[in-house]
Amino acid sequence: MSYTVKISDPKDLINSGTEDKLSNAAIYVIELISTYVHWEGVMDVEVAIADHASLPDGYGDPDGLLP
Picture 1 (cartoon, rainbow, N blue to C red):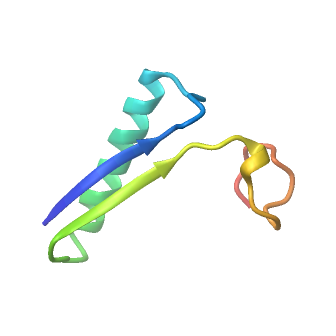
Picture 2: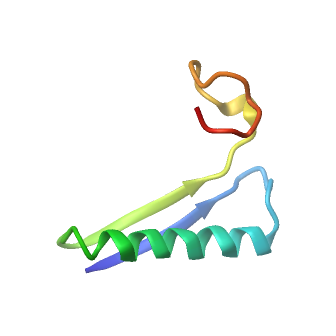
């Protein structure tokens, strides 16, 4: 099983240290999922970093907390 991880931060909102931590967290989750799910080909994972103004409607207050 193969995968790619991309951290997308077009507005440069996070520093490289945070980007590395997010990448490591994504890899951890992918490897955990791979113990239960098998896929063929390459799974592409993208972590998109955005400011609160980019939240879609229905997400409530942009306080950084998930609903």
